[in-house]
Image (cartoon, rainbow, N blue to C red; front, side, top):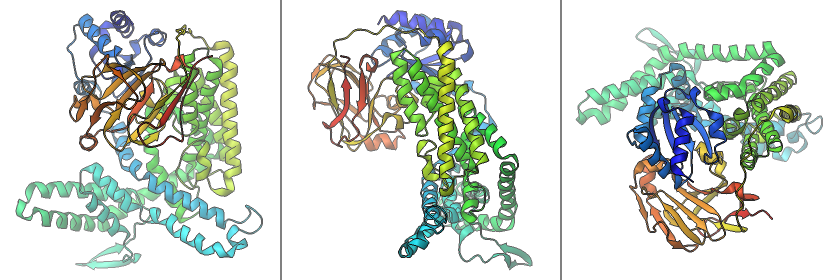
Length: 627
């Protein structure tokens, strides 16, 4: 690679006068631009030395690859005359250039609160679906499973208790999560949720007489909005008392006064007012669903993936928790139709991506399409959306049509979800049992329409330049794990470059200790100054990147130690370096170790070994050369 020419081409394609600042990490150039629309995206997509591009958090990122990105960045700085920046410095520059969006800030707030509690709601919802399966007549005959097998009635009742608990006591879950987000003590937030759901409350028809004021003993089980507001008030009071009370009494009186005042305000003002708001919002959503029916679901399905590209879908869990709570309270209600629509949309995007796989002759795009297509069918669409479908545009719109048609059919047949879960092919686990057959038909419609439209249209309209593949002498090889820990799919890594496999295919490992070993026999091609990543070229031709943690380049080598140098010969199992996992976690970083075959396009197949062990030296990745 001619690093100066690559830098010149990148500068030309993004626009010299369009660049505000630039930095780099282990694999990519990170740029802050004045106007992203001025980028010559087609030229960058066709650049043989650029492995991909994407935009996130105000940064335009150009993937160059380990080793080369350092030299390209040096040339970039020389040509532009810009000041060298760290990735932390660049984040500040990017943040300064972004306008504050109150709507998106509010959506992020909701996402931060509700995403952590989703596992509890998924567990409760799936247990509810299992109990519905056991108690619903008409699934296997006129009688329910419990009626046909009375000896499992006790188990069914136990499952019912377990399934209801997360929804009945949802204010406790929300209270704890909201307190963390608002900067209050999490256990005080949980306490407010407990106060609002305590069995001692006798209901809205019973009152406390407080100096002549009649305060209703309303129980706020299943509620979300009242506890959100209550914990927000708690956070303000707690911060106020921490600031103004002397340290001698702060520990005792801050929790006492915060809980007592918040509790009183909750039962007198916050609860009654915002319970009405919550009920009105839920009723309005259900009314809209019941009124618009299949037509409304079709429109929602037609726009769902477009909503995902804006990030607005992050607010949906807040609405879905209300719908699921209402369903848990009364199974005759509508249930979660948003989840049903999400399933249709994700499957459609996956189908369109698979159509691109069959249409394209670009091996790099084939690899990305196959991996991101599977990811989309399992409910994670960002790699398919941003890595494939939006690049070609028409697959994205064909998928919207498929999603709209399928969602309309689902609405017409009253398909509903009883739980949250994986919004894709595995979504049937969350669907109300009686509607599973029609859910399956809806998903098949979504896949078929999106795939056929994309393939037929793409036959005459797909245009791309196919880069010639370098002929290399490669051999089949097994790459072993470089660290003790639990193997994972790259698609589960919380970084778009790795999860979309833009750097190449491979695997991830959740490390259980911090010693890093060589996964192959070969030569160390690069050791980063920050000691968080290594490049090794194996004797059989595999180019292996070992990246320790996400964004750990920002630690600038702190908590890392390296035992090897560039150009050094290593054998499988030799120690490359070490990392203090606890210190890195304490600093707020994800410690997942990524093992990526960066020359994946040169192989016939690169595949993670799914039954891999949890010790370093265990088989992790199989690479297969072309015949």
